[in-house]
Amino acid sequence: MRTIKKLLIVMLLLLPLAITADYLFKTLDARQGLTSSQINCVLKDSRGYMWFGTPAGLYRFDGYVFKNFQSDSQDGNSLPNSYINTIQETLDGNLLIETASGYCVYHPQTESFERDMKQYFARMGIETIPSVVYIDQHKNLWGAIPNKGVVCFNMQQQTCFEFPNSDDQRGVPQGTICSISECKDGALIVYDDGRIVCCDVMNQQQTVWGTNDIATQKLRKSKSLKAFADHM
Picture (cartoon, rainbow, N blue to C red):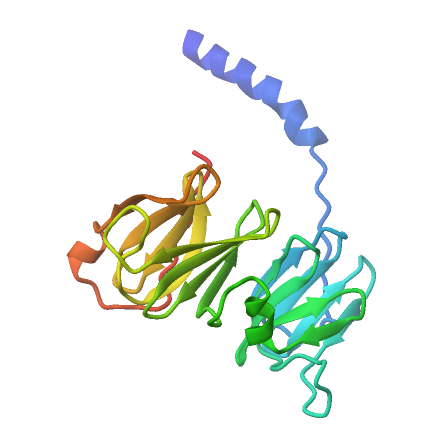
């Protein structure tokens, strides 16, 4: 009986919190200008805009209406392809967008898209266009260079770090990198066979740790593998 009373007291104490909780939901659809029913990615930028990547173009939402950006074969400053896979924001407020035809950079001042990615990465000291690009919470740009390794450009210090294919603490293993994410120790480099290594440039340039636990299960190789670290 005492246990039941305690349970009732706890429920009564929590009841006002449940009653006073106020949630606001808003449906965004064609009435605001979103004509695509499939959303591949979402980003809120530093200016407060919401960006949605779809198979039918890039959408920007200002809180009232959507603006749609499409690929135009007659306009060299438009998207190279209307199929959007990922959207990331760089330190200077530009958007790095991955389309079905590769990466491009959106410049908000001119509302134009830079397509010459070889020149864009060359300005960072990266000679080859990465196959995978990831911008971490410190605004470091990580890139996977096929058959060479991984590069990291520190946008704040304008410094480029290289992790070549090697077995020491300054390098990463040889293989096909399919995604890059991050954890509290640094960037997570994920391979198509399940291998994961963690690289750090914030404290010192080194490979912090690696694991072959998934790879040892000899699962089928997949370029869709990704790693996510929670805050536990």
